[in-house]
Image (cartoon, rainbow, N blue to C red; front, top):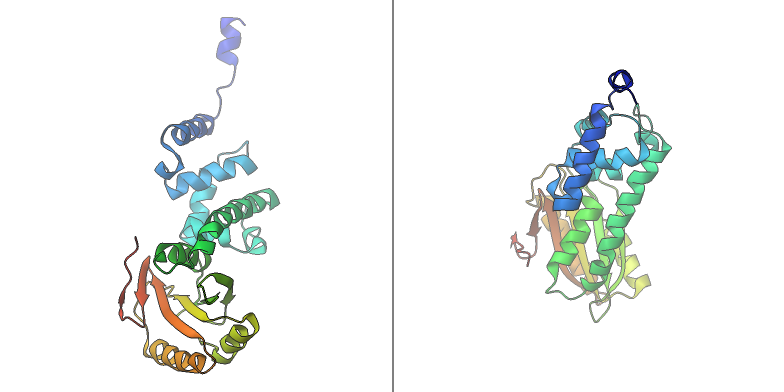
Length: 237
């Protein structure tokens, strides 16, 4: 190639070098060294290979606030955003599914009640991205192994109804001996409302009549865990 041809050859777009630097950083220091913007940008580079995706990553985080909420958003909602196609949504759901599967083994071990961190990591994965309050119900065997988990989405931004009869019915059908309840406060306020306390006590009394021990009701807010029954924060190992 002549000097003139070298000079006339167009320079590669700036984002090419930026992508290379992100990849090198991941390989050198690990993905945990990246910001949420960089992580989302890195994900998008695999579904949108020939475009600067940093503005799109920033736009998504402005709309959804956190990476977790971006990954958990409904596909039809995501595809209404300019620049987001099926390939990007599928990749988001793939990453979300991988994170969920990585927590599942821990979820199956949370049965040992000295391993609260497994419960809370799993609960955060399932609840913390939600913009409305929801209930995570954990049904346990006599040996305190997990039978099943279910999420009841019937809340608003700042309140939720605890469906006692539905929970009792599920405990009976699943032959549960122990029960744990976790719910999120999207506002970040991790203290229970008066209704939370009263409904929890009522549910505990009702479950005791069918031989189910309601171990605790936890509230997640701003990564804090509050125990209603112990009236205190729970320290993780």
